[in-house]
Image (cartoon, rainbow, N blue to C red; front, side, top):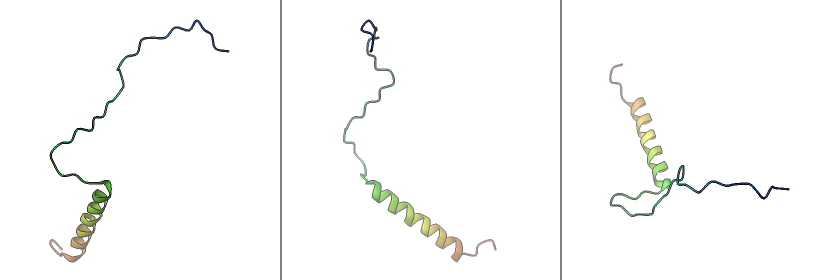
Length: 56
């Protein structure tokens, strides 16, 4: 069984992160939109890599 005479330290805020839901101005993107945008940019880069002949 646990001992009853165990002493505890006072609670502190060290290591605790608080997140606030403050709305700020700017573009709001969902994670799905970010993933789709990244895939589109990657496909454009791949297409440009194989269709251009600069430096070859």
